[in-house]
Image (cartoon, rainbow, N blue to C red; front, side, top):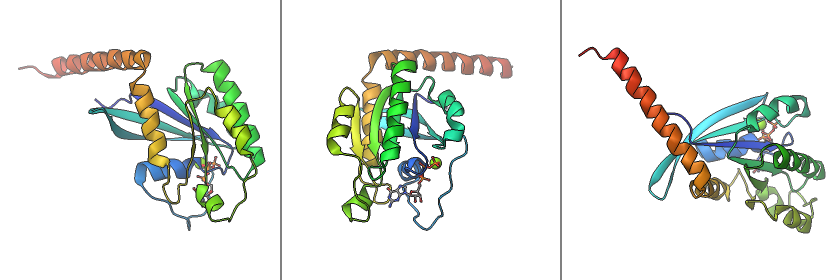
Length: 201
Ligand SMILES: Nc1nc2c(ncn2[C@@H]2O[C@H](COP(=O)(O)OP(=O)(O)OP(=O)(O)O)[C@@H](O)[C@H]2O)c(=O)[nH]1
Ligand SMILES: [Mg+2]
């Protein structure tokens, strides 16, 4: 059975580091020497994760941050179980954009669990970049959401922790789990039907 159990979508301004976050999480790597290439539309990848002895397939939609693709981006967060909204703490415009996505999700996808993610932590830790988004404002916005993480795709700091928390929260959600069980049963039925059609013995 290969269908995804949980759908996670990444939102946020261009260049905040969404693709790097996904690559760090899925492939455990970060390549600083690769030139920045903006995502066009969206990219999909999947990974299996284990929570409480159960394995879940998670599907991750990495969307394009460019406002040119905004209308398309809406397609990708429809039906998402969780959204990671990324901002760069050194960029106030990226924070303003985050607030836009937060409002959209609250009105359109009420049940979607929302996690804020401040990216490129290594740059702030080393002093290479200065924080521009005040911490108290982030704290105020995080209230009522499912979490706020400061991550570095370069060092990997807090990346696994963020995705682990999302999967744990989804696995603990009775409504989400009921849907997944129903989907699994349906999928099993479809596979059994296919087997019947192709098996003449
Ligand atoms: N030092 C450092 N650089 C990062 C980090 N994350 C991303 N970058 C760099 O920031 C740039 C943009 O990263 P992307 O992951 O492509 O950004 P994006 O949000 O996917 O951009 P769009 O696809 O245009 O929306 C790249 O040059 C990355 O190498 C990080 O954690 N630390
Ligand atoms: Mg990208």
